[in-house]
Amino acid sequence: MAKAIVVAAPASGSGKTLITMGLLRAFRNRGVRTAAAKAGPDYIDPRFHEAATGRSCYNLDPWAMSHGLIGSLAADLAAGSDLVIIEGVMGLFDGPRGAKGSTADLAQALGLPVILTVDCRQQAQSAAALVHGFASFRKDLNLLGVILNRVASARHEALLREAITLPVLAALPNDSALAWPSRHLGLVQAQENPELEAFIAGAAARVSEQGLLDRVMDLAAPLAAPPGCAALPPPGQHIAVARDDAFSFAYPHLLDGWRSQGASLSFFSPLGDEAPDPKADFVFLPGGYPELHAGRLAANAEFRAGLRAHPGLVYGECGGFMVLGDSLTDAAGTTHPMAGLLPLATSFAARKLHLGYRRLTPLAGAPWAKPLTAHEFHYSTLVTEGDAERLFAAVDATGEPLPAMGLRRGLVMGSYAHVIAEAA
Image (cartoon, rainbow, N blue to C red; front, side, top):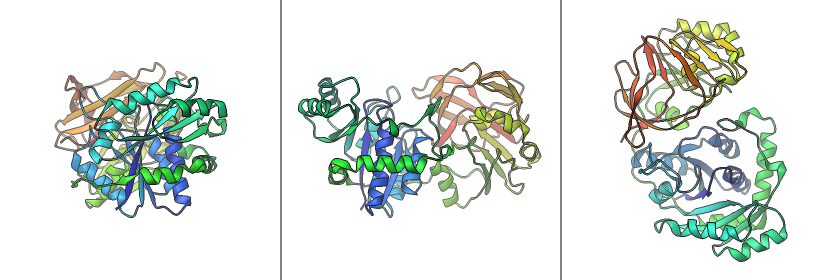
């Protein structure tokens, strides 16, 4: 049975992605068969973990996924693995108001121990109070140790070690060479930087110091996955999926689940001016960063013509939804024509954050019939919306009603929501 452990932090930006990625590669270098998971809804961090392990990284979301689906995905990760490392989301206890969905909830559900990554910049003994609070906040949580990150000096490390009562597993110095650029939705995507492999190797070398690997393996616990259940049903038998730097936000658990249920998948690159396979009965335009590539997408005539001529159902979510519209205005204020299949214009020039879980009820013509869980995270805004059918009725994580989401015109449809699973 594979062992597993959760790497968490008091807040976003503490370095847990870097440390998780480094641990994954360092263990792999030792010959340990590693796999990774990411708590909560996230498309960017898992791609770093996949680069470190060579395997798919699944999201495990205690709000959006049933206990059975989490069990199925955890069992898939454990198969053929010696160690599964799960990176937390935001702060350890952060989640939707009044509902399970935090990293702590996931760790408790799977019975796994937690390591806390603490960013020690601009604090010394005060870090002890922070660690004590996190260790004592929930009695059902097994917080076993601390990784001190971004330590300034040997004196700084000594002050921290003397003050913190929880076991300190390692003290990692602040290293500007291990900084990765960010943009509006998180870290710059892994595949966009040619220095990725060197970055992963540097992270692995850093976490291999001070005996950290041995301590992590000793603390990890057997991963006893609960009984599983099927993933979201495939929306077609042959699904053509857009995949490139503009359309990279597709959950691996969805794609793998569709394959396991008999669907075949093909891939095409809109940035490469490729059209979807005309034989596909479902075209999926995932989210991503079309606002960064709007000029190229507008100029790619083969892609746009192939999308317009496609005889099957065409579905876009978030960035894909934007591209199905009439136009997209980029951050510089330049407006670019898009596919023109849905009556909407979107803009990234006047940014506004839209963030939160959604529970969706499909309306007539939607790709799925049963209620769904989803997540919304974007900065673009709707400028205009024309005459079309709505796609989903929606409520937020607390059950508060939201305006109906998305648009449908014939066989073309989409919304800003990223679908995760069938609602339990």
